[in-house]
Image (cartoon, rainbow, N blue to C red; front, side, top):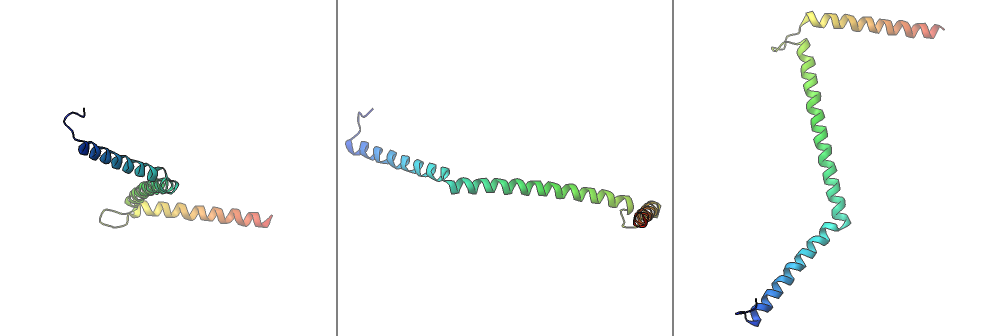
Length: 107
């Protein structure tokens, strides 16, 4: 294996391998350092949270758009045939809630 190589070439090869090993050890030391681990863990958690918030925003936006489409045409005009029954139901529910509240206070 060392045939044809001079002592200077062998020494240079050893020095290069030492340098490579030192760099590898430095990388490992950085990777296992508690600050690096904490930083990486935090970055992963923030990324997961961002992804979850983004998905929630998209789902909420989709739900609002779908609900809005029930009461407004694509041109933005209200649909009275759908708004009036919902408004009447809301007024009735509020009336029932007010009556029940008044009844409880009288007791």
